[in-house]
Length: 337
Ligand code: NDP
Ligand code: GDR
Image (cartoon, rainbow, N blue to C red; front, side, top):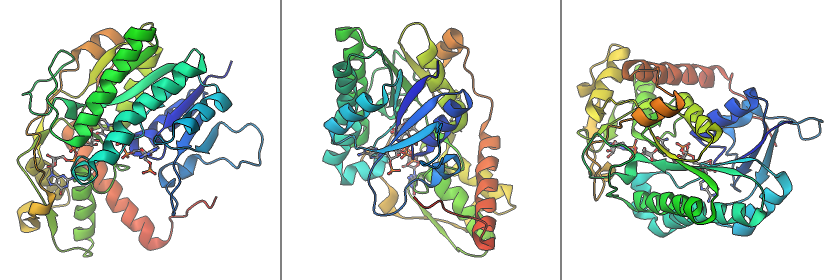
């Protein structure tokens, strides 16, 4: 029988890779898309299937994590056996500007999913996209036993979502797993996260389209992995006999400064000639250092990362150089729907 999955946040970085993975595995995938005044499906346009043709494996639905009834309805209409809750206001800096919205979508939104699944009476396994940001100021290495000390409205919302997931598992015996994922990046990473902001700037500076790059804190260190490998970890979690919580990380950590060095260095440029400081990009409270210990998922489920830091940076810089070439040559086409 064809397995059916529902993915919230399907238009985001992880949603697009997860969608690809599930389609490859033969799933029927239903993606939750929120209403936007402009197209927001660029990351999944290559997976698009004409709604007028039979046998579609990817179906998109308008709904919103802010609208609980839309979630109840989508579950009733699609009857999935797996739900991946990836939808969120996911930008840490922006969460300081929109704390209530972030709490509503990123925190209470997860509870809405859990309650909609509970109300459905269907046998559904739920994946909750938890985050290393929950560890905040607790020093590395961080694993599943490390206490949380969130340092932003986003992180507070994720802690709420995390405990809601655990509580639904313990209170109602639901199959709910938290993936505590450390930063993971790719050429599809949102352009305002620091890695993509840097690699995009490198491509544009090399092409003569940009002169400088303004950044905030260069001293923060992150455990950066490769997104396609991380969505595989999400899927593996939901195939386990029992629900559980897992850290997903590389076990290495590099500073934003080191990311700049490698990214500019990849095209023969010296980062110090281009990077400038703008306090606008600093945060009221910073998460100084993250480095995950992913022994549990390696031992229990056999997951381990393959792409290392230098390879990741190169993949991203090369991706942005290619994107620029495609844009300039008019090769990029958008699907109208
Ligand atoms: P993105 O920001 O790329 O994608 C977020 C997705 O959520 C988008 O599809 C977005 O839609 C959707 N979304 C936003 N608001 C709503 C809403 N109100 N209702 C429904 N959908 C909404 O995030 P990533 O793909 O990078 O991350 C996926 C998840 O994993 C997020 O929950 C994130 O917080 C979490 N996470 C990410 C990590 C990372 O390093 N990438 C690490 C740990 C956790 P739209 O496209 O319209 O904006
Ligand atoms: P993060 O990612 O906050 O870790 O959250 P981000 O790339 O935004 O920041 C990483 C570090 O870089 C520093 N920094 C800058 N950040 C941005 N965005 N822009 C800048 O100009 C800049 N200059 C320096 C930041 O201060 C920070 O220390 C990401 C998101 O994907 C979350 O949703 C996810 O939960 C966590 O990763 C794990």
